Every structure is written in C-alpha cells, then in structure tokens.
Length: 467
Image (cartoon, rainbow, N blue to C red; front, side):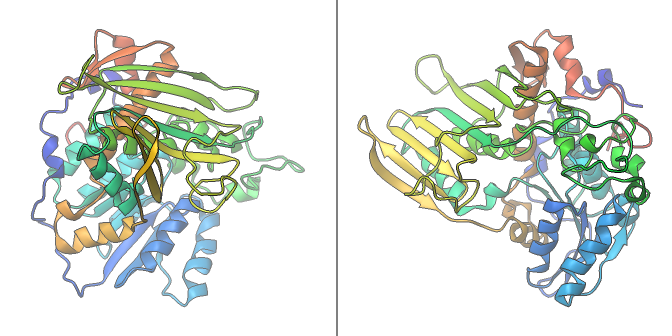
C-alpha cells in the first residue's frame, strides 16, 4: 500500500510536456472510421455522456460499465433499445472494459475517488480518456495523472466543459487582451440550495425505511459490487449516505461542493486571471444548520493569493471562491428578468458563475453569457455568449491525432483541482497555509503535506510508483 510520505518525493518537473501535441503510437482513426467509446459510470452524469456521444456523427457508445447492475438494464433500455440503437457491451468491473480491444476511448464518470486511477489504467490500456471533474481526488493523484498523460500517446481530456464554450473562451480572451485593465481579482460563486442528507445507519435500508437517493434494500445491494465501488478508499460498511450522489459530502470519496460544481467556477476564475498555482491559501467555513451525516462544509469561503510580478502595488492577484448551500443573492445572474429560471443554474435557489475585477471595470459571467461594466459609473461594455460541445472537442482531437485541438487540457484540469484541494486542506486544518508551487509542497508544514494524499491506498487499487 502506498503511504503519504512517498508522495513527497514527487514534484512538477517534467509534467509540462503533457499538454504538447504528439503523434500517437496507438492506432489512429481516419475521418470515416467509427469511434467506439466506453462510458464508465452511468448515473445521472454518466447517462448525459452516453446521450451526447451517441448524438455525434460516426460515434458509438459501444460499452458501458457500472458497479451497480441495477442501473445497467435501465440505461440499456432508455438510451439504446428505446432509441433503436445497438445494445452496448456491459461490464461491472472497469478493468474488464479496459481489456476490450474494440474500445477506442473511455469517458470516466465515476465518483471522484476513482477518477485519476481509472484514467491512468485506461491510458496504460491504450485508450483515449475523458475524465470528469474533478479529474483528481487529491494532489498526489493529479501528479500521477500528469505523469501518465506525459508518457502514453493518447488523448486525455479534462471534464471542465466550459473550456469548450465560446462564452468562456471569449471572456478569457477579453481579459487576457487587457480590455478590463489589470485584472487583480476573480470570484467564483456556487450558491446552490441543498437540504440536509439526514442520518442513516450502516447497512441496507430496513423494511419501511426510505432514502431520497434510492431504495437501497438488501435485494438492491445484492446487485452492487460494493468492494469495487470503494476501490482505493478505506474499507467501510455500506451506508446510504456514503453511496450514490451523497458520497460528495464524505471526505473518503468526495471533495465537497468546492470540488463538485465549484471546481468549474474555480477553473474559469484561474483561467481568466491567467495564473497557475497560489502561494498563500486561507479558507474558512463550516457545516451549518443541519446535524446529519455530511462531513464537508456547506458554507465555505476560500482566498488564494497568486504572484503577479508585472502588476502594481503588492504584486499579487486574488482568487476568491464561495460555496453557500441555502439562500442565494444575485451575484452572477444576467437575465433581464432576475426571476427567470431559464439558463444554466440561474434560479431563486441556484446562482453559479464568476466575477472579474480590473482597473477599467468588471465582468459578470455565467455558463453561456458574459457582460462587462466599465469605468467608475459601470457603463455597459462588451458582451459575449455561446455554448460549445465538449464531447465533440474530444472526438475531434482523437480523429486529428492532435492534442492541441483539445479545449480541456488535462494540465489545466489538474492545476484547477490543486487550487481546490489547497482550499479544502486549509479549511480542514483550520489555518492559513503557504505553498511552494515549484516544489509542490507546503512551506515547512508536514501536517499539510501529509494531506496531499491518502494515508494508504487499498490493494489492489493502488497507483504504481512509475506509471
């Protein structure tokens, strides 16, 4: 089993090349060759992947995999048989899917604690990889992911979908071209109404008990390979609140809402600021109102300082991120009618997006629109909008055999995840931290260093010393 201390031997040296174009040694698809994709994890988001890939020209979801066999027949009927499509091959163990030589690429849509390991194994099997956000459960896994992407001649995409949106691309370009002046601060907000998850005992639901996520009876669990679901995480008894979706709120498997919805906005904030990794981190928050099984904070504010040698004053930039679980103000709602619930995550319950502040004005951005307000009077300035197709971007990069065509580079995904992980570490330790990006470790802080990886990885679900 791999111990935390072994992680400290790693640094960022040599991983930058993971994002350079290359010629693949694996078989190259021609424009007329059918691309066969396997989707690993077919819950709600996984079914989105199935649907989106099957809608693309000359692309086939040829295999699906899920440790919960209760899902598989439903997905086959809903997304294949019911639409007149060929049935996919079905797997419970992702390792068996990766052995399927007819599969060209995989989409990894598992819980967070499986993302990086599944991606590394897929690369080793010669598959192109799209891995959902956050692409790594902790910092150690992010570095292993970059190490593998640098070694294996396959396309590796991060699941930050906004990287493919004309809205985000034009917003970042506007900022980088200096139209907002010196951009000294970015803010990401994730105000998303979430109720209590309650308290449940370990084991299947007893007769008469219910759970809002699923009917986890003994009969249901007889079709779940729970050991595979746990994978590299510690061995624990089944609990409904550590399983489908609610795993997000348990540190063994998830990263809280900052690592769930919030990592999208952190990625856009870091992108717009034009920064890589912070040198000082401070995060405070808590789990308010509810006494339940949730471990992660439902309210959190993180402040990240980045060096800015070309800037004025203190020569730094600030990224501020905030999670809120209950009531929402209208920081990033852009519709003319503020009560309009159309659009992405815009409603009285949810308010998700970004703000950028510069010497010439400020920008407000959500997933499909941005607006600027210029000068001291906030006069309306330039705007932009537009949605893209992250799935098409992945397919196009594979067909062109050219990683430069990929919008969601894995290095960008890993770096944005590292920022998120640094915030969670600061919150969990209850203090501000100093970080050295060159050495990829904290400054004179062994306690914080130890939180960059698991205490141990449960065999056989371990990362090799050298991928």
